[in-house]
Image 1 (cartoon, rainbow, N blue to C red):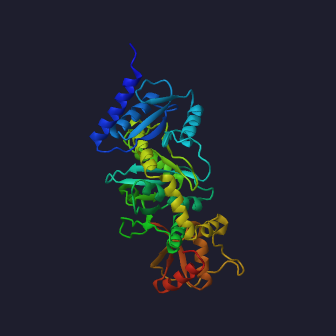
Image 2: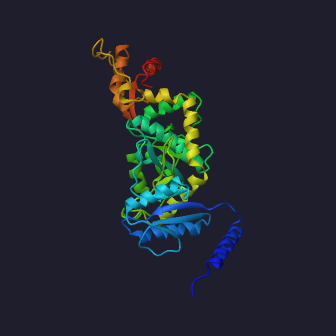
Image 3: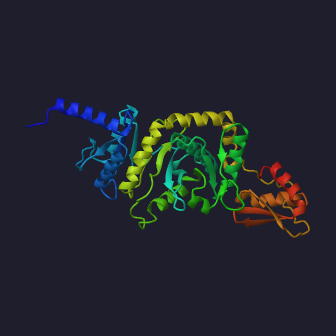
Length: 388
């Protein structure tokens, strides 16, 4: 004999009420879609993660998009990945889903994902900004946008004043200078300090492992590698076992919350990604992103971005040709903060002012090596020429 639909509906209502009483909350459940086709571990693994997420947080309702797996979770049939993505997008845009988790989704240029990892040294949660996608075609501009994306996601996940660090990679010093200009213009940003003895906003590998900043800013290719390492370092790489996936795609005017997982992501990561997606939806990520960009624009964002093309870097003027080295001195002091691609030009600026300097590489990156008695004047010149 078939199940009476009226009794089933009543049972569902009273079941949800009992669940609300048990958990102490009557909040509307957050609906998160999950496409299950295309995983290297099969759709059953993804469904296992979905069931785990819903069990861990009864305020989440997972909607499976795909086929071939038996589950008590709500399911929308899709025959292949293309159809699954089309259904997912439609459900997000008509608001029958609050957020979604998927694999191999194509974001438009200007959208990049912010991941969330658990760092191994202290079990500290940290956002990686960013891990997939392309915020901009120019590297420095992309990393600057990644910073704003990271702040928006962190705030959506209830980090009121998240700290920001910049990974010590190519472009880090230019991003540092740009962010300091934004802060001077009134944009609220809290910089982390490296745990290493010499401190600074630019983070080293140690800081990455310890989770020193709430948000680690990097380019998306570097972030993608880190996500894979953090999630699969204990499994040999074929099974991502730890973390929350590669995170939501963020853009200034992006209109949906789609979190990315890898084809190698296992059930624990799928569960974490679903929880991450729900956190972003409940924290109004889309509005948070708009608010951050509005604040950045008031602080001079547009003019700053215009100046950050590779052609806008300070270029050595050759009116006087290549400068000859002044009388050599013992260089016992150093000036960090010059971008590695500009290091030789910075030294030329000092030579033309009859200040002896050398290129060098310190533990935190490139440095201008200088005599102590010349440092103050050298700093003035390099700041004047916008190398610092």
